[in-house]
Length: 181
Ligand code: HQG
Image 1 (tube, rainbow, N blue to C red):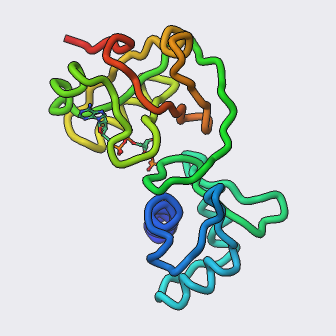
Image 2: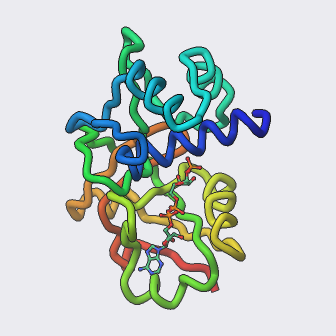
Image 3: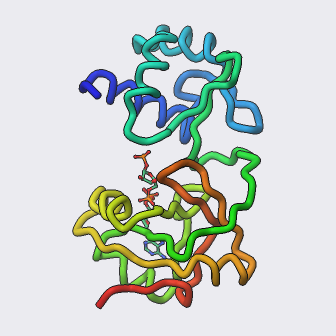
């Protein structure tokens, strides 16, 4: 993805995950925004978004960050929200292991409290250690934690598969984590 498309994608993530007010945009309870209104309000703020640019950044993204509705009239972020939206996710039986990438500096707190969503609605988990490592690197020296996902699910902590690269859950108590070292 070129730099300008990346900037548009980050801006769209910011608006749809965290701050629709930045564009005076209303999201419905499911987190969906009207695409035409989004484009108009973005232009009013000096952001050149267009329908084709939005489709391009969705197609070019290495992660499935957004969904366009079937009729392409609405768009929402698939994960990452700090604002309360109802994603209407379907509980999914997890694979034998999931992974969480974090920074070394967070380990003492994670060891005692487990994983919390922090500013987001969900804890984000990865399907592979490689993916988790790249998530963790965003925060500092990366560390990959293994999650005993079936045991977590059996204990009543519902897991949702959001996209190919992201699983979501509300909390992971420390007893379901394998922390290296
Ligand atoms: C840490 C990106 C201390 C947690 C990624 C993480 C992801 C704790 C940080 C998605 C803690 C929160 C989300 C505890 C958790 N004590 N630290 N008890 N519990 N933490 O950015 O998972 O590219 O909100 O380990 O790929 O890093 O934007 O979450 O380090 O899928 O599409 O608190 O965002 O996707 O950080 O990333 P974040 P995340 P995009």
